[in-house]
Amino acid sequence: MKVCMVGTGYVGLVSGAGFAETGATVVCADIDATKIAKLRAGEMPIFEPGLDELVARNVAEGRLAFSDDVPTSIANAQVIFIGVGTPMRPDGGADLSAVDAVALAVAQHATRECVLVCKSTVPVGTNVRVKRLVREAPHAVHVVSNPEFLKEGDAVNDFLRPDRIVVGVDPEDQFARDVMARLYHPLCLDRDRIVWMDPASAELTKYVANTMLAMRISFMNEIAALCEKVGADVHQVRLGVGTDARIGPKFLYAGPGYGGSCFPKDVNALVHTGREHGLELDLAVATELVNQRQKGVLFRKLRHHFEGDVRGRRVALWGIAFKPRTDDIRDSAALTLIDALLADGAHVVAHDPEGLDNARARYGDRVELATDPYAAAKDAEALVLVTEWGQYRNPDFERLRTTMRRPLLLDGRNIWSTYQLGQMGFTYEGIGVRAG
Ligand code: NAD
Image (cartoon, rainbow, N blue to C red; front, side, top):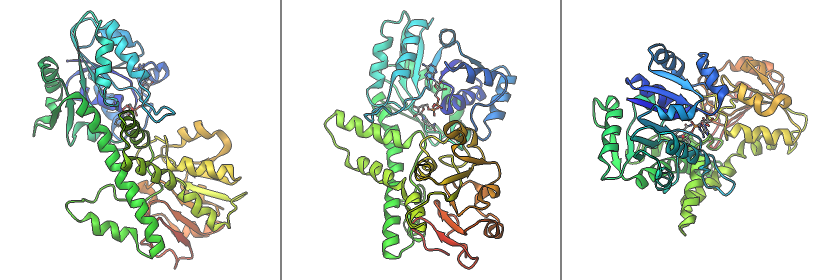
């Protein structure tokens, strides 16, 4: 099957390489010629565990190629995926201009009956909008909604071993259904994991999933604040509620607020869709409100330790990426903290195993970027743990205590709360937890 993946970012590159791995012939196309040139030279434009081997293998075996010629790539394909970005507009809605551009390109350049699959996260109604854009195409274009649920940091595994595959297709469109079933068959050999539904429900499912996960995080962040007031420990509360099989243990971690390119934009887009239909989605609104407040929690705590004035203080950050195992810093809580520290005149020095290039592109020399975590912490008056990379979980605390100017540890992920850091001479503070 000849597949064209339009948009070669986190979703497009992983999905394109993933389909190639199952035997399809895939061209990943993108208007970013620099990105395509890198890929052709064997360089990964993003960091995602396991992606480089997956890409290299499928390129070597002739199933995966890259192109900045989007029209020709579309012309040669039987199945065209839209994997472009759908960023947040200032009014909270999703910017669909890239999706529209791909649909119009398909209308213009498709050379045969084909299936156009929207993998990007798009608001309800986009399927109808895309259908309208391809109506005049000289060949039949079957439009399908197939939102992607992979998560950065584990994207390759998520794509090749998904919990479920949501496919929204019109009930009467047997052509599209057959193509989608065949395409995903290799990922369903042990059990059929395709959840078939109508396109509007598929579009909405993606937003509901992300908002529900975000809601759990925001709820626990509120509970963490309450724990601090009443002397409870959110770590223990999490264990207490998460062991209830009806609730489950995931996404119950208090922290510095969710970030990344998806949760904030998707919660906002869902709220926006509700408002367009005269509905105020109060829980989604509150989820985002709590998160915005939470994004400031590390700065508030830090300032408190410096009597309200961080000017001239050397503050070290461990972690810039919005979560571990990715280089993606979009909307990360670290950015909120760094921006606030810079605005108040602090000297910021930061380490991240994979996010330094993106941080450099954003901050230039306004932030000192260290390639070694202990070098970042040296002479610091505070060390703030923002992203729970594995290598930060059990650091050499003795080394930190002797090299930091002031032994203040602010743990945004509560990963050090059970260590006896007070006895080791540190001042320790987490988010809603008692120091060990
Ligand atoms: P990204 O920003 O990493 O990549 C988007 C790519 O699309 C870029 O390379 C850009 O150059 C390209 N592009 C933009 N306009 C184009 C056009 N007209 N023609 C061809 N290429 C074009 O984005 P992403 O993180 O991969 O997200 C893509 C979509 O998938 C979004 O809707 C997002 O919400 C959704 N999604 C993302 C994730 C994730 O973890 N990143 C997970 C699930 C779903």
